[in-house]
Amino acid sequence: MATTRGGSKAAKVLERIAVAAKRAQRVRVGFLSDATYPDGTSVAMVAAIQDFGAPRAGIPPRPFFRNMIAAKSKDWPEAVGRLLIANNFDAQRTLEQAGEAIAGQLRQSIHDTNSPPLKPATIRGKGFAKPLIDTSVMINSVSSEVE
Image (tube, rainbow, N blue to C red; front, side, top):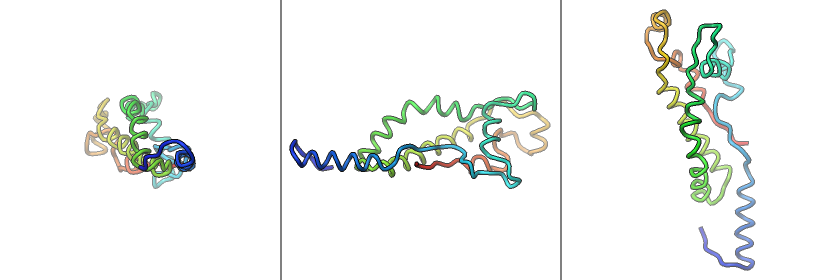
């Protein structure tokens, strides 16, 4: 990045930074509205049920999303700040990169979640004991978008 001191050059640099920084306003990460299972079931709905549980249906909470946010969100502001500088204050590019990084953290959290364990009947039906992974539709539907 160029170094300037005072005067009209500094004002032009600051104006360029302000314009670049306003191009994008926010990034959304998770299960976007168009993500569905083959039968049309909303992936976001299934993910919410898995994250919060559904006691009446016998589904315990497996808070993969909430745990990821609690563990990782404190690092996001500094990471976005570094990306803004590295991207010459291009907000669109910065938020795209931040969104992909956070989406990766969410996928990792799905992968890492192993408790509570599945019921024996569920394991028999699936053929394996890994919670949150069955058809891989949910983990493959993690996405991000910049608005």
